[in-house]
Amino acid sequence: MTHAHISTWAIALILFVVVLFLTKAGKEKGAKITAMILRVFYILIVVTGLQLGWTLITNGQYALKMVLGIVVIGLMEMIAVRTRKGKSTVVVWVLFVVVFAYILHLGFSLPMGM
Image (cartoon, rainbow, N blue to C red; front, side):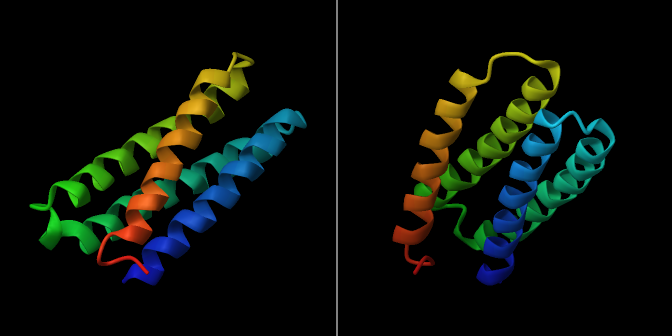
C-alpha cells in the first residue's frame, strides 16, 4: 500500500507543476482541467494515507504526519488558486516547502518508511 500512496503524491506533484505552468502560460482551459484531475489525486492521497495510517493513528508522529499532509494539500491548492488570481504566493511557497520537507523526513524516518 505504501507504493500506491507514494505514487499518488508523486503524480500529484507533477500535476501541480503542470497546473502552475499552464496558468502562467495563459492556457486557462488546460489549467482548469488539470486542476480538476489534481483534486482527484488529492482525494486518492488522503484515502491511501488513511489506509496506511489508520492502525497507527494512536502514535503521535503518524497523527502529526497525517494532519500535516492535509495542510500540504491545502497549501498546494492555495498556491494554484493564488497564482490563477495573480496574487503573491511567496509566503505560501515557503510554508509549502518547509512542511513538505518535514513530512518527507517523517515519512522516511518512521518505522513504516524506508
